[in-house]
Length: 209
Image (cartoon, rainbow, N blue to C red; front, side, top):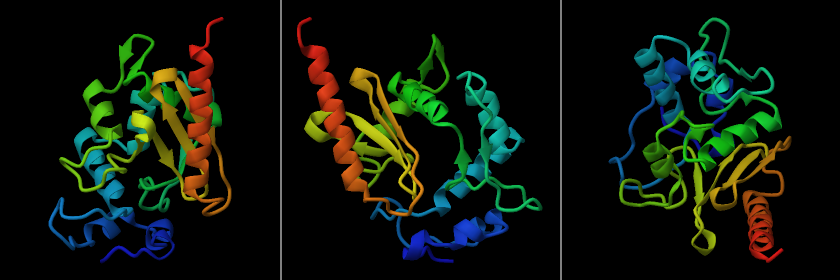
């Protein structure tokens, strides 16, 4: 089953068995030959996690991240159906803005939270930096969008409805935006705004007091 660019391929948003959908997709080109954003790869990663850990991905996330980050509220993860019970790996994580900000700060701190290394520094580095040595996309790495404006290693997670977790590690800046409309004002608008705010914060921090 090929990926469709139309409306971000609604099959992955409304399918009732995403495992079956992912296993029936086909490889259309040689790995590393070109970049094409699609929602099937996260589904396959979720299935790998399920088989490696023996528990649902949401349970694994709760144990490894939610509890360790002392999230302020319960989160949830939308499922494809109650019968299949598979998390919508491409979307559907629901949380408060403060808790999304904690997740962003974990990456700003290179995977370390209050002295505990929750995620390896190596993984944080390779998943958020602009690099074409192993992937043909300079901007998109392992589920993070890299932004190297002015040589800064900024990165962001972006949702279909204008949601963002924007991270500028050098100033410990994390910006969370909760959107509600598809393509809300466009990705470039918000990234430029976040960059402007990050620059102002850095400039302010450099001024003598």
